[in-house]
Image (cartoon, rainbow, N blue to C red; front, side, top):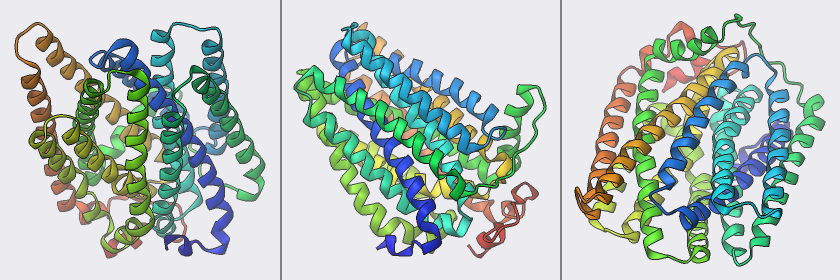
Length: 440
């Protein structure tokens, strides 16, 4: 078992991070299930694209704000502030349910807030984790921490699915989320003295554009990060397409709002069980055995194969199989590998680089995909082509993006050795620097 690899001096650090990740993912996933099913039921499946577009524009804005302050403020203090702020926001949404505000307002808001949390909070928590662990420790422990995230995701998906029969359950869930976020803030606050974080902070110039430019310059200056960024942009487009395809097919199969929420939550829970098995059995061993160079190959290959599944099995079955495959690969292999890889970035730049890779790129790819998919749906609604043709167009676009991402990872592999000697990867003096990676 991967848990055996946790050393005695790592237990406390691991436990604090595990709690933060567990609370965050439970709250974000439960909000996403409630918000997504509520939006589809109250507005319709095609209209969720415009909610997603607004959602991702906000993600981009918050990623910019995060990158402005991620390396200027101590990350532990920023994490505490964000958890407290989230607690207040969930309490506000709870009050909106209590006063019976329109569902067309509440559910998009729940979806958007959950998605912002799903994107921003992992960036700060995983960056904090890189401050607490060296690269060799991260390669051994991050897959286990990702397994903890998967367990929280399982609970976050199951609870809304099993308690969908009354509006009160959703109200109570928002109140519970507010309390859990407050618990996370208190836990980290009380742990700071024992954690004794001493990461380097950088004094930035006053002009925000200079701060934002640094993340881009770093990625452009190190070839492996540049090609990884390109693959993430293309995969973000393709992934959003598969997610919409699943929701569209589910809305056609389940017209009842409660049944839709139940299906969506249970489907995600089953998908999460597969992730638990993957995280606790093979991910850590694969990362240590094959290294970063080979581990990034899996995501674009899986994406292309998932699109083929959707094309071969039209309807909900193909959509569920394709979406499940991609999600398992993304959260079980790709994300822990990418977050361990970010440990190679120097302390004082890691927040901005993380925001660029996991904030700007994902948001940009998702917004573009929402607009293009929305235009295809509008064309279908005006009779320019039929629904089946619209679905085919969307899936072919996703396949093209997967092929482009595969080429980018091929270039990543070609430039890996040279990039490891790049002066920008000079790290803090600590065991487990860049030289440890040269063995790969």
